Image (cartoon, rainbow, N blue to C red; front, top):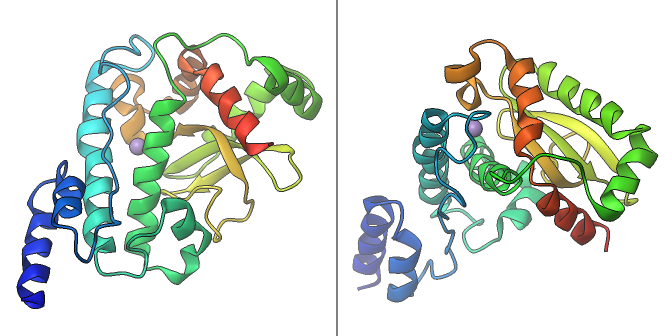
Amino acid sequence: MKKFLTVMLTLLMYSSYAQDAQVVAKVGVKVVEQAYVFAPLPYAYDALEPHIDKQTMEIHYDRHHRAYYNNFVKANFDTKGNGMTLEQIFDNMDAFPDVIRNNAGGYYNHEFFWSVMSPNGGGKPVGRLDEAITETFGSFEDFKKLFESAGVSRFGSGWAWLSVNSDGKLFISSTANQDNPLMNVVEERGKPILAVDVWEHAYYLKYQNKRGTYLSAFWNVVNWEEVARRYMEATQ
Ligand code: MN
């Protein structure tokens, strides 16, 4: 019976992306805690036009992000990470195979990325975050240059981040592939509050090889309220 349930659960897990967690939670045996959710995009595919085009968003969310999620859930099914939060997995990243590192990272990083963009984005940071950026980087303009530079100089695929370190200080970093500052395998660890995806799939349709132009345009869609919220949470 147990074997039958395990087989059934495995089939369910592999069956389709969206309802996996719900279905398994209902059956509720072995993997009840593996309720990782594939959340809807918080705006329409064309909402970030003209800075980020509709087709890029559609492919990015519906194919790339979905694939990271599906591959993570499948790969994690029988690992000790099953039932852990993503943050707990990242804390112990070096104990997991690359398939988990790449896909848990891809899943988390993209959810994060969608949340720090908004059709009503742009402008400048707000509140205590504004002060911290000026204090750390000299000015908002200097911060933008350094952040863009982190994205432009990332060789190959990866991300640029603004994070809070263990002393509560802001720092800019970049990570390769789908790594992020929460993972215990990266050089500079911290709690991320802003991210930009610099994989070619994030910009190539509209900007081709001009990653710098994409990064300049990114400021028009940054959701500073959400970044400030994450900053307050990280510095509590
Ligand atoms: Mn991406």
